[in-house]
Amino acid sequence: MADVTTNSPRLILTDTNFRLWLPLLWIGVIAAAALLAPLIAPHDPLAQDLMLERLPPFFMDGSEPGYWLGTDSLGRDVLSRIIYGARIALFVSLIAATTTGIFGSALGLIAGFYGGWADRVISRLVDIWMAFPPVLFAVLLVAVMGTGLGSVIAAIALIDWTRFARVIRAETMVQARMDYVDSARIGGARRAATLVSEILPNVMPSIIALLMLEMGIAVIVEAILSFVNLSISSDDPTWGSMIAEGRGAIHFAWWVLLFPLIALFMTVLSFSTLGEGLKQRFDPVLK
Amino acid sequence: MTSTTAHTHTLDIINLNIALPRGQRLLRNVSLQLEPGEVRALVGESGAGKSMIGKAVLGILPHKIKMTEGEILLEGAHLNAMTPATRRRTVAKMSALIPQDPLTALNPVRKIGPQITDPLIRIHGWSHQRALARARELLDRVHIRAPDRVMHSYPHELSGGMRQRILIAAAFAPSPRLIVADEPTTALDVTVQKQILRLIRELQRETGTAVLFVTHDMGVVAKISQKVTVLFAGRVIEDAATHTVFENPAHPYTQALIAATPTPNVSARPFQPVPSALIAELHRDTVAADALFAQRGRR
Ligand SMILES: Nc1ncnc2c1ncn2[C@@H]1O[C@H](COP(=O)(O)OP(=O)(O)OP(=O)(O)O)[C@@H](O)[C@H]1O
Ligand SMILES: [Mg+2]
Image 1 (tube, each protein chain N blue to C red):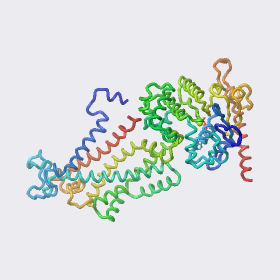
Image 2 (cartoon, each protein chain N blue to C red):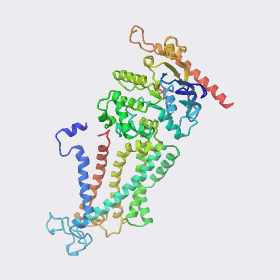
Image 3 (cartoon, rainbow over the protein chains, first blue to last red):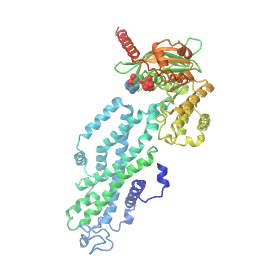
Image 4 (cartoon, chains in turn blue, red):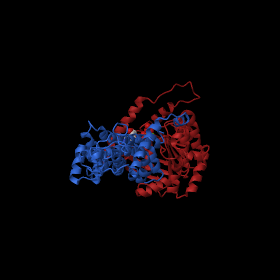
């Protein structure tokens, strides 16, 4: 199967290209923007200029050179704010997803592999946890902990570890019953060692796929919390707060809403597509 | 039978009982011995408990299934008396498994090479080089061309027959005293089955390893083993030399089992399945025996 796709004349949009390279390209662009924000942003994202308020993007009449995607109601450059917003979005998603992933996967591996009371305790905890409505939970948490990036990350990890725990537990249970685990034990491997060296590599593709999905989710959650003004201070350029502000001006300055929305949408979509693409890429059986 | 006897059996199972948590017995007072270099066939219908015996010896019984009674001695050493860690090392040092399904017995995301050399390095303390050389030697012996390339492959890149030959190589690589072969040819197609069987027999003769050969094919039994244990519903109902069993089977179930074996040269004889009345009777016996056992336990 793999041979056929690599040997046949290539289309630009083969399945692999679509699932792997396209999202990687977009995430690369966003990551570059985040890293190089001070160098590439044409303007200060916080600089207000009421003389320049609600300038339209470059392809419309009345646009100002240098303000490619226009300005918002306070005259701040939309493109620069999206670029700086990428910093917060990527930072939050990276930290939140890895925290969530490590914590949830570890619990899932333990529950699925050891079974017994460890599994009962962890599974019960997951059930109880999932009974809370997640958004309410996040809002409550941030309200208690106070706004700020730390609370946002903690909220994401505390809500979403159950996704990893559930999926990885189920996969671990399937793998733990496989004969190769017995083979390793007959070969003298300790029980815990078979979990790490035999089973973990088999569930790794799923962990990676979930991790990507989680990064997408983290971007959304951060945006939602910004939208309801519970993320970091409202001055900081986040995609969520930009969308919230743009909403009020949608009839006369749609670009304030649309461009950050596109950035958000593309990023979330890229992460979840990339997850699937990576899973296929790194699973020697699926490949 | 005990360690005071002059020679030690390679494997000595004494009065083994295995049960589910609620007390249903899967093995009932099973005893069997393997002499050094001997091949013993373990036959019986599906669900008789053949694999359970192998798993009990190798220490891979499923979570909830426990040994309730009995002794297992490997080269004279009492496995039950050992700490789990010592037992694990002892079993790994002295025994190996040729599994039924060569697809699931190899880890799909790990390359073949380390899957063969891991135990050699971990348990026998060999250097990486020495383990690799040994793996190469054994792969060559099981007629695998380009062993180095194969060791760098993943299991799914190889055919079923090739995977089973790799598992045979892996089993013989540490020069174990005992190999449990659990229906090693059932998952393969007929042409490959013969090759695999021949390979196991050849290697067994060359190395003098004792083999507990699980099968339900009496034709295979005749070809490969010197002794036979017939198992029914977790009980040993016949234990004798292979030729005795074929010439003069003592138990009606064994007689029926041999009658049910299609023989290629006697094509005139119709195929006779094991009579269901006999199987029903044997199951009644088992239930009665269990009731007796339960009574004895209560007293
Ligand atoms: N994990 C398990 N939990 C509960 N019962 C089990 C489990 N594994 C096996 N058994 C039961 O133990 C009995 C013996 O099973 P075993 O696998 O040893 O049979 P077998 O003789 O090897 O049969 P086959 O020829 O089909 O491989 C069967 O009745 C089976 O239902
Ligand atoms: Mg079996």
